[in-house]
Length: 325
Image (tube, rainbow, N blue to C red):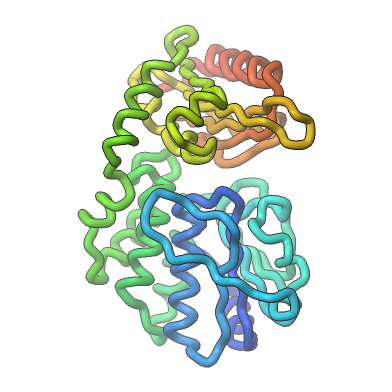
């Protein structure tokens, strides 16, 4: 796989101030890309002003706090938006005010925004793309801290190199990062070890699984359940992989119920996963999107959840010959 970054280094070199943005409800790939790139810029361009912006974070892994920046600073900056397929999902809409915008992403069928786009949907992670960019600039310093940030993004977006979009290039970038003195066992523990409370919630979640025709599994968590477990909806949906390690399951989903502040009624956000069956096109019909085998939906009514589950069941039945159990 050959990636091109024509003009990216030159744009970075020309900018006095660079602001880095990620998507809402950030995962480890978004955070790893953002903080990995920030540290690479700080290390190699100490005279530049570098800001990593966003209001939300993740409880998976350890991440630095986001920076704060005034509107005037952002207007005078080069904005680099990472791991975000459409402008509406950027976790700080002020990026649109920047003097220049660069998009670096790996999601399929993205909305193009800004002046430069480095989008490679055959890469498993945005951190994979950035690793390629940095590897091909040996004149610039690479550090253990940068490598650890990027490795965490690749490791989680591939589910420890288990997803179907893990390629030889993905493994090569992991090998490149592992060449720095990062502790791979420690990073795995940081990302995947559970607290006792999480372990107990995972057991509860499995007890709630509903199964349709052996191959579709789903859980709908009510708002009061989230309150009882002292979890936010986003934190609960991070447990989606607890449902997936069953040979017979072709598609699995986790929905969380929250009270919509404006309409004063309950709505449902959901995470969808599959082994081989494409789900992101269905997610796009329900206020969402994502990767072919990993997607999300948002603000669904109860009836829309039912409709989505029916469509997933039909998709499984019509593509059963493609499913590998």
